[in-house]
Amino acid sequence: MFIETDRLLLVPLKPDEMKRALDNKIQLAEELGFQLFSEEPDDKMKKIYAIKIDKMEQDPENYAFYTFWQMVLKEEKLIIGEIGFKGIEGEEGKLEVGFGTEERFRNKGYMTEALTELVKWAFSQKKVKIKRITASTLQDNIPSQKVLKKSGLILSHEEGGLLYWNVNKG
Image (cartoon, rainbow, N blue to C red):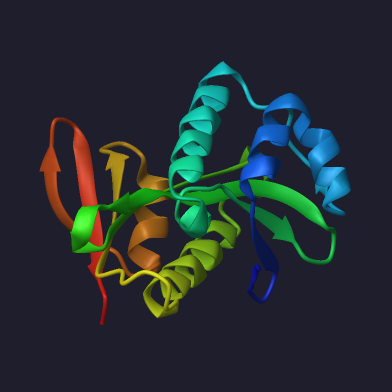
């Protein structure tokens, strides 16, 4: 399973691939047929990976809603960032999205392209009924705010220095 955009492939890591990424992400990228632009995950990212892996193991059928989707430049076969949901929240069909890309690849529209298509996928897939997608940004993170806005999310409120965004299923 993957999502294809004009310039990108969005490839969700399966649970075993997430575990292998913790050990050696460069090797995993090569096994998947890609190159990895970034370095190995730092300690903070390793903790996030571990949390995601735990959630994936609790709900393996719906791993795509917990995993990191690799953002791959199609022509170069180069992983330039990650995007993903933080899991399905209860019965209300809500997902929170998070994303990050390597600095060299920012301000080129890649993240907007990826997020727009991932939101479309989440609302159109038939496995889980998704009604709302949310995100939060720091007040001073203007680039992420622009990505969210261009991808169709709407600013809903501010709280504790964070801006909260959402989009409901059309």
